[in-house]
Amino acid sequence: MNEAVLAPKKTVFSGVQPSGNLTIGNYLGAIKNFSRFSEEYKTFYCVVDMHAITVRQVPAELRRRTYETLALYMACGLDEKKNTLFVQSHVPEHAELGWILNCYTMFGELSRMTQFKDKSAKHAQNINAGLFTYPTLMAADILLYQTDVVPVGVDQKQHLELARDIATRFNQAYSDTFKIPEGFIPKETMKIMSLADPTSKMSKSDPNQNSVVYILDSKDDVMRKFKKAVTDSEACVKYSEDKPGVSNLMSIYRAFTGKTFEEIEREFEGKGYGDFKLAVGEACADGLRPVREEFARLMADKAHLESVMKAGAEDAHHYAMRTMSKVKRKIGFVY
Ligand code: AQP
Image: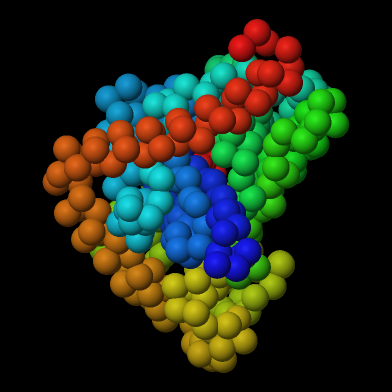
């Protein structure tokens, strides 16, 4: 056997919050990319319910969405036999390491996080400490599994940089403990923007339903939302910074069809936005149909979903404990 065969697999970790119905931003920016790692990497995909409670949740909805997010992972092609699929709160080491890493993270660093600033503005009545320390818990999620690669949307880049800084600081204070993770943000995957306000991110918790296309939307809803999408008055399908609405629709169309921006510009030359929006809606609804169908099948068998989360948590716990025992020894806890 050669060395390559004996070398341990590299590790991938990512997560999605069950904080709302998942959007095509979550799909194109993150979940769609997850399955490409399943064969060659040890993969951990987590439903991050502890992150979700940084914003008030209705308990019954949070519970339902936790099942749904797991089912969506599977419907998007993640085979539970090839990937460790689990729920964050089922593995207590996330909270444990999250606390420890809080003590290695600076107030100034957390204050600079744009997500904290955005979410504090959106939830001015509930700017809780968890919202502030969200990035430290995210660092714990990643570092717990000695992760090599983190596939995330471009909006999470700042948090990932912070996770790297925290890991480096910890390693320098003691000795090598954590692997320094790399982000995986494919060039072709842009940040998907709101259909109603293309200067802000499409978010599952946006109260304006027309600004968001959900993975599980019916074809009629998808078509209606794209028809209403904000564009501009130029009637010219062209990718450009000063045309955020059209550029966003082009990114979505490209992601679902695999066409380049130049091909899309040629396809709609001389045509109005009506035709273009119709084509984007069709491509999106058709691309999501298999996911919707598989999701419905999976949700009908709750016992199976529970057995997947249980097995996933046991496997994740096994790996998480190894890192925790190392961390505790290094910082001087009696272990
Ligand atoms: N609009 C987006 N474009 C590209 N990628 C996106 N992601 C989210 N929105 C977009 C990526 O989806 C993954 C899971 O995100 P999350 O649920 O952990 O948190 P989030 O980034 O805060 O997503 P939302 O939809 O905006 O949730 P809420 O409204 O609850 O805050 C991440 O990899 C993210 O990059």
